[in-house]
Amino acid sequence: YGRCEVGMKSSGGSGMLCSFFTYHDGFPFSAANWNEIDIEILGRYNNEVQFNTITAFETHHVQRKVVPFNPHQAFHVYAFEWTPDYVAWFVDGYEVFRDTRDHIATLNREQKIMMNIWPPIWVDWTGVLDPTRLPIYGYYDWIRYYSYTPGTGDNFTLQWTEQLDSWDQARWDKASHTWNGNNANFIHDNAVFQDGYLVLCLTTPTATGYNGNAIVDLDVDPPWLVWAHAEESGIDVYFSEPVETASAETVGNYIIRGEKVVSATETQESKIESQITAA
Image (cartoon, rainbow, N blue to C red; front, side):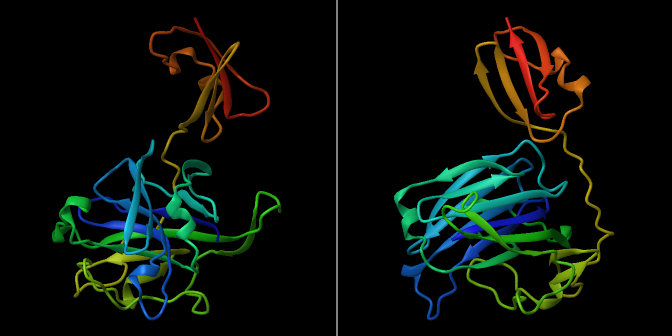
């Protein structure tokens, strides 16, 4: 159990996905013991992240989440919490889905943290890959792991942070295998540490490794609305990051169907919370 976090930028385009997940790699392999928790970002969608748990006999429990940004354009923080009672997924620090169904109790085997970029054979899921688009890259900035510590703080305790500046061979293995359903073979040369990032490369066999530009982490996404709820005096809204006062208090920036927004006031308690009054 625990909490796993990653700073990640996926790659756009049909036919492939970038992932961050945990997997029970027991030996000998047994489909009856399958345990896996996934964050998967498909290149074919510019506004979606997929969450999944996979349990006995490769039983999938997929949840598709629309996000208010393009995950292929900038780094975002993705995370999940795994406990005996639930698995919850987070985007940029905010919980977006929690699964408490019966199958969660069967996620009780040790798992390892993994990342990959790969082109599945299932085109109905990921779309068709155009080989002329290769190479394609997925980018990883850092990883954090928290142990599950019920009753301590928020029930999770940070154990380590991996900055991914170089290959820590005491912690990480590079893959050199494939499996049925994967249209690629993993090789060591396609897991590259560059400019303080881990880059996973999907390439042709004759041009392997990272051959892209310098990696730059730019904040290109505007703040997005995390939640809104009604109060007696108006509606409180909460944004994903600080909003300039002039923007937060501009009435024309808010639309409520069937209502007229007559005022907007940024609260003093938080630079990312605003209160609007409708009439």
